[in-house]
Length: 203
Length: 203
DNA sequence: AACCCTCTTGACTGATCGTTCAACAGGCGA
DNA sequence: TCGCCTGTTGAACGATCAGTCAAGAGGGTT
Image (tube, rainbow over all chains, first blue to last red; front, side, top):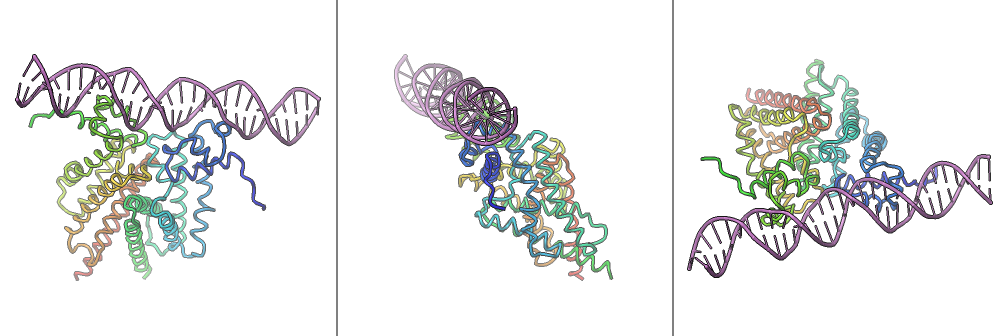
């Protein structure tokens, strides 16, 4: 378990992940990636046919990282499934706080930046959203009959994603967390009403 | 009222508005704009010091266009203030439908693409969001006591913006309206619950 | 006519872009 | 020791980028 020395390919992917998150895909040059990864262009093109293949590797790593890097830390110490959803939202809030409202969700940024993405890129972006929504939906399932019977849990999970992405967008644009917080507060209120409804059903 | 012949500056702004919406700011070259506007580089740089000033002009035009180009047509024939909000969301849905889920909200796309925008750009993006939220908030105000007393109308309007932007993002990424529709349906349900609450208060 | 001013033309610049490639380094099996 | 393979080096390439500029067109004023 000693610290593994990252090989060139891993350093490149990590550097690209950082830079794509900070500056976006189009505004990050291959030269930027090489500088950040301390590598040469030949090494990059020995592993990745094109810059887009670096993006694909980055998106794959994001997909793999959802569970260990995002859900696990966000859910740590939170047992209640509905509170887990808000803990997840709190995780993004923290990222915004730390970076002065600059860094939000890299998948959302890339999804809107890449306007006509090649099929593999679009599918990976979609897969990231799907996995995120599935994680929230699993929390809703775990909440069992605390939600009204017949609740569209998948649709509700998609609403949670919209609240997160829309909140990040507003926070970044206004350099102010208010828009993010307002969305989360309204969502919280909606969940309260849903749980009240479910209690009424039980009686 | 005969059709005015657009001058070069207007043609450039219109071309840039189209292209920034289709391909984004970074992926649109000045040469693209000149081709679309049928103009020469000297003409553009005679009017606009830099490419960013073209973006600023585009964002100004978007701000001016919110009322006549967005709200007026979306609200046409819809008197009920709460239905107006959903008519506005329907307007974006229509844009997604027409363009096969490619074209969403240009302001949202630009807001996430421009990562460290110069102050004037960021302020114009923020002004667009502010005006949009204010329009929704005005509908909520017009709904009067159909919403519970003490409702945070500004925060609720920000939620509506998040639902729109998050829905557009999901629709574009999945090339499928389902994520957009699910968010709107959940929002509709939340509004129904709020109105039920308000009726209970009245009794 | 002479002058001025606004706007247009389009070739041009230097920088930067993504990408290529011949040369080379080092470990490993024969 | 030899060849082989994986991976590295960094100069170089053509394309494209945002931006420049000297020249001129066209209309209004004197």
